Image 1 (cartoon, rainbow, N blue to C red):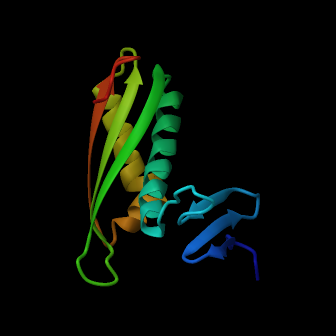
Image 2 (cartoon, rainbow, N blue to C red):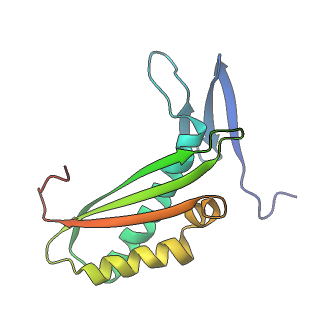
Length: 144
């Protein structure tokens, strides 16, 4: 019965802290543990969206031989006031560093990720309004 299924485990550590682990040993900490802050489960959804779309975009741009030197995806979310307090609005800001990067290449990579490849974003889009923007920066340029 495990064929086609993905399995992860969340082990309770203390109070409201859990440590999630996949079958290959990857871990994530939800809640504070040993004096270190953790990431909340709802925040992990935003992290997952950022990582999912970021992986897609880097892969697409590299296949197009774009001279990409760095990338960051910043995500902001707004939650509903009432339980279950789902994300109602999510905004992604893509920061792309490199030389001679064409905006049309970045736009296309983002569009493909957001509409075809990033399962996390597509799934979140079923219950949230998702918007995005991007900025192309020169290597070493500050995003602030």
